[in-house]
Image (spheres, rainbow, N blue to C red):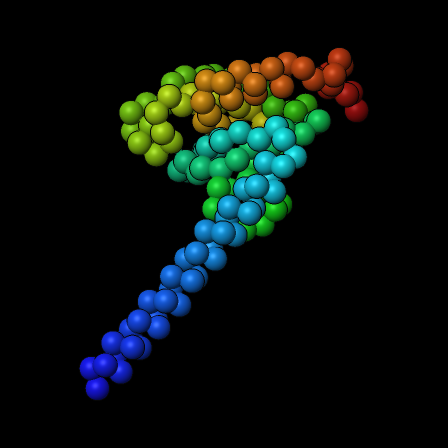
Length: 148
């Protein structure tokens, strides 16, 4: 009876291990597919009153697409229009945030337009430089509000 129980436990453990390996492979393949398009950086996102969520930001011509770090879908969870996005403040991550985000992260408060409100993005120094350059490199006239 004990050998049957040990054999059942071994099969359950093996099945669990296969599920964990398949999940890790799925997340890895998703990240490779996201990085394939280029212009991706590690980026944390926090909405007002929320907690930090780790993920990946991908630069597009007119938008910043944010993907959750452990999701399975290839669709972005948050899309921020470059026209509506503006930096309102930036600071180093405080020690409590650094535990979740990692060392050396910078936090950028952004106004994302009337619809999205204010959000915070966390990224490394080099990624922040790229983000600010991307914002400033918008085509001429793209920040002019249309009367209407």
